[in-house]
Length: 429
Image 1 (cartoon, rainbow, N blue to C red):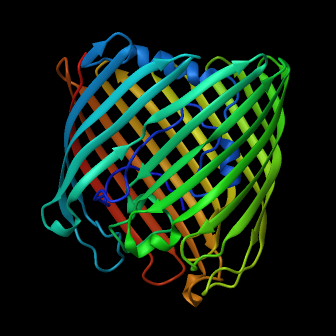
Image 2 (cartoon, rainbow, N blue to C red):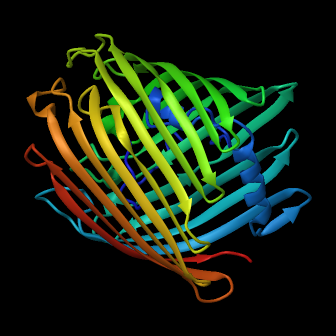
């Protein structure tokens, strides 16, 4: 259900967005209610909180009083999209004007916690397809409170993630309107015994799709996590991990399920500029017959992920994530996915930055779906290239290009999309 990629293609028109908040050290995260994905993003220790403090202290600001900082960042973009509705045969091109004002407010809290509210409000104006025009909200705020009792660290958090990009979701095709809002709230506890760190966490997740065509995917999940990490060396930690989750859909289209995952992981940092994090385990989806359309069948598979981050020089950094997982589906209960996501950033000169990224997914969707056509094997490719240039003190420009290609063994599910655009941004220095 998740995909990668940036850009537009879906416009949010307000109905469900209320209080938005995001943890700085959420123990659980993911697309939908994937317990194995939650394990990947588990954070133990204070590194993430410390990094957020340092990054906020170094940010510019428009207004400051005491420890409170507010940064206002206006921008305007202009994109050309040659296939806004990601269709194979009925391709429609358009030019989209995207003005936006982004707000970033931060305030430090006791216990080395930080309150961050980060959101943008803008408007997408489609010159030829006005029905796609509307208010756009880019939200991602942070709310987390941490406190310590002896060797225990408690993290109470609430996080939101919001996306609005049809072409960025590998299982979607033939529509310009797809987006989702996820809100996760819960508690994580770390017990640090120097050479051993135990982590337990619980979260409640609400998942909403911002399109009536796909609102049957709306669901709520309960997520539980446990990890034990052993420091074999100051630069090497290995451990075991396990999780359990339950998911109930609002409508009786997809089947409710329990998910169980267990495996091993490692965090190896051979140098200050590189980190290598492998994960390997097994996952079980236990489905209940709640759907009126899909026969419930349990699914099992191994999961694996290798994530590498490396700063080759001060000017060149790259990252890579690759692996295999089961993923909750959209037209069927489950999708078996292989993925690879490399990226590289180049700081050519002080005023110029070049960013490149690529995503690939090979998906095999279960035959037990809405119809016989639900069975599908697809390949999804996405690539991004952007060049940023600061040509005056407070004004920067970015030229970007993105392509998305979807191939399928089913008719009318393939498409190619190209998006080219420019964005001007004003940032106080």
